[in-house]
Structures are given as structure tokens and as C-alpha cells.
Amino acid sequence: MPSKNFIVAIELGSTKITGVAGQKNHDGSFTVNAVVREDSTTCIRKGVVYNADKTVQCITNIINRLKASMKTEIAQVYVGVGGQSIHAVRNVIVRDLADSQQVTHDLVNELMDTNRAMDYKDFEILDVVTQEYKVDNQFQLEPAGIECNHLEGNFLNILQRKRYYHNLNNCFDRAGIAIAEMYLAPIALADAVLTDSEKRSGCMLVDFGSETTTIQVFHKNVLRHLAVIPLGSNNITKDIVSLQMEEADAEKMKLRYASAYTDANDIDGTLFYNIDNERKIESRKFIELVEARVLEIVQNAWYQVPVELTDKLVGGIIITGGGSNLKNIDVAFRNHTHIPKVRIAKFVNYSIHSSNSDITAHNGMMNTILGLLAKGEINCAGENITEQKDIFDPNNTPEPAPVEEVKPRSETPVTGSGKVQTAVEKAEEEERKRKEAEEEERKRKEAEEEERIRQEQAKPKGPSLASKFMKWLGTFTEPDE
Image 1 (cartoon, rainbow, N blue to C red):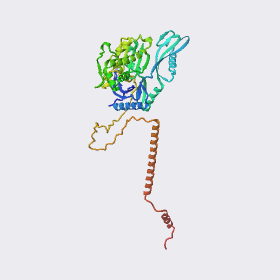
Image 2 (cartoon, helix red, strand yellow):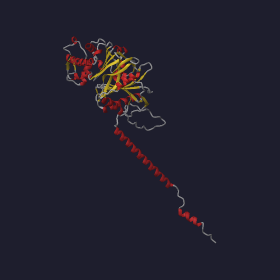
Image 3 (cartoon, rainbow, N blue to C red):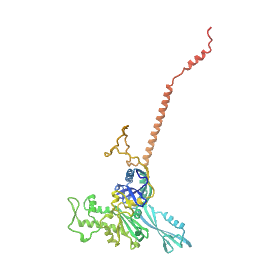
Image 4 (tube, one colour):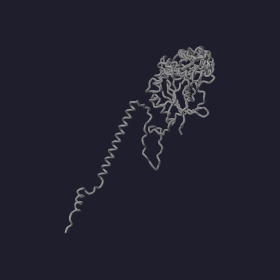
């Protein structure tokens, strides 16, 4: 029996679009019922939609596969927003109060509304994180009720380019999928993998992705900085390609041999790595190339930490994402930042029940989508889908027909092709259907009129008018003598 209460989340990554459907359990755990993926390398770059048509196709395929798995229509989805265009900007709103007035909740809300109304050219405010309020010369998280002459609201505005934001919304509109809520994927990830202690004492979260690396800095339970750098594990693969090999071979070598840090004493100058059956490459050259790119990523990530917080990261550095599986990545961060506490977050902090291998792998690659799933509150299930068997599936064994009645098998319409019509095509389709309906109505009326005439002609005819007149005239003739 298909579930009628589940949440659907979709993450648009640079290499794949991932969709999951799952349920929240009464004990606080989650059950993931379905996981589907679509390759997005041809439509998304660095987390940003650049080919809308192919993105619509991928989203449609994701939804169709989830519907088939859940046997239920999907009414709406939760979407994670990320990518290179996202960055954070600090903003301060100031109010001078006369005669030492008491700060009210209305005044605090006014500061927040003023900040929300800020206009950034070409950028859209996705979210606002309140840092603190400066009440005269003291910083407060809750200023309401305090008397002061000067009030400042410090805010962290998280922005994204308007064009990218509207492109993403347009893709879901064209795919016919309603968005229940659009969340910032980095913040959903942070809530899923960080502990309260790490956020409170100060930490740096690094999401080491394929084409981008997202950095978040927390202190005193508040997000202090967010940035996305356009470097990721794919850059390591591309560097290995420069050693004269195919990208597929380079990816295999990265997974097999690459290490973020190798001690100089452990490098064997006589060792060679096999590219294929015929070619080899010197291990020292390979190690130096990989380490140079990793060091660049680590340096750029550390540069994003505000200077005033570099010595306040008591919670340490937490690394997640697919790039966190790189050997000795924690050592590389520890050596450069001199932060002794480095943790690799392979999985989310809450209990997940699933038989899917992508979930049970615990490799850090599903943390963001699971964080988005946890954010969901509204039921995404629609109506049940009547199960239809694919008559073209060679593995499909049709059910035997009843003995008392054998009916001819009707063809099953092929649906779910994922084709998305444009507005013009939809209008033309509706006009064509309207004309067909009018033509059918005209033919029906003609047939009814012909039937009426035929029935009139078939009725038995009585005596003619002339015979009736002669009969009437005979009533006046004199009788014979």
C-alpha cells in the first residue's frame, strides 16, 4: 500500500540532480523510501542552471521516477538552492533614539524590514541572518526592553544573482512542479551535520563538492560568514588529465592513488602508477600535482574565515561532501590552518532508515539532500497512481485472464516521456482540441437532424386533402328518388 504522507526533496548539484522521498517517524528518525539521480553535467555548472531545457528534462525525469517508485502523484517538492552565485554581505541599520527610549519589538522589526528592503543590483536576498544588535556600546541578541540612545542592527544578507534565481524557478514552473519551499542548501547541510556545541563554540564547515567548495563559519550559534569558491574535486581530476590521459582514467587514478597530503619520507622516487596496461606515470609527479591543487583549495577556504574569528574556532573544522573522501584531507587542513581539531562528517546527525546503498554508504555525498528532507514539514504526496504494466517490458509477465470471460487486451498508453510544452505549443494544442470538439458537436447535430427527418418520412400517411374535400362535398348531394 503506497504511503500517503511523505516529503520530497530535490538538490541540484553540478554533477547530478538528486531526488529523495521519505517520511518523518514519531521517534525523530527518518525513513528514506526512494532515491533517484539524473546526470546534470550538461545543464548545471558550479551549482547554477545554464541550460534551462535540459534542466527541465532532468527535473521531469526525477519526478516521474519518484512517482513510479512511490506509486503516488507528487503535489509539491522542497528545493535546495546553492552554487557559485551565492555569497554573504554584511549590512548595518542604524537608529538614533531621543531621550533614552526603550527598544520595542516594533522597532526591532522595523530594522529587520529596512534591511530586507535593501536593493542589491543584479542580486536577490535569499535569506537574512541576524548577527546581533549594538545597544549604545554593548552587543545584545535580544535588545527589546533595553533603554538606549543608539541602536544598530547587524545583519548577514545571503544573496544570489536574480537571473539564476528566476531561471531555477522557471525550470520548475515549466516542469509543472510546485515548490513547497526553497531552502538554502548550505544552511540545511549545517543543521544536519553540525552539533550545537560546534556552532556555539565556533567552527568552520567545509562542503567539498565536485565543482564548488562552500564555506560557512559559525560562532555563538550564529552564522557569521558564507562563501562559495569555484574549486572542487573535479579540478583535481582535470589536473591529472594534463598528464596525457582520458578524464575517465584520471578519475579512476584519483580515487585509487590520490592523497591530499603525503609525507616527504613516504615518497618513493622509483615507484610508478599504472594508467593502463601500457602506460605508467611517476608517483612523485602525480603526488605533487594532486597536493598542489588541494593546497590551493584549502588556502582559498581558509581565506574566507573572518580575521576576527580565526582564533575562535574552538569547535574546529568540519569537512563533508564528496571531496571529504580524499585520503588525508583532514591532515591537509590541519597543516595549513594549524587548527588541531578537524572532523570529517560522513553522515548526518540523526537516524536514517533505508535499504538504498547511496544512503547506507555514509560517504558524505548525501548529507545535503538529507538535510533538505529534514527541513520539510508539508506533505508532498498527491493522489494514488493506478498501477499500469508496461506491455513493452520483456520481463513483464501478464496476469492470466479469468476463465469465464476472455477480454481482448487493450493497449496501454505510453506516458511520462518528460516532454515539456512551451506556452505557444500549449495554446496551439488547446485550440486544436477546441476545434475538434466543435467539429464533433456539428457532426452530432447533423446526425440527429437526419435521424429526425428519416423518422418523419417513415410515419404512415393518412388520406390526402383532396379526398377529404370530396368526402365532405358528398354530404350535400340529394338522395336518389
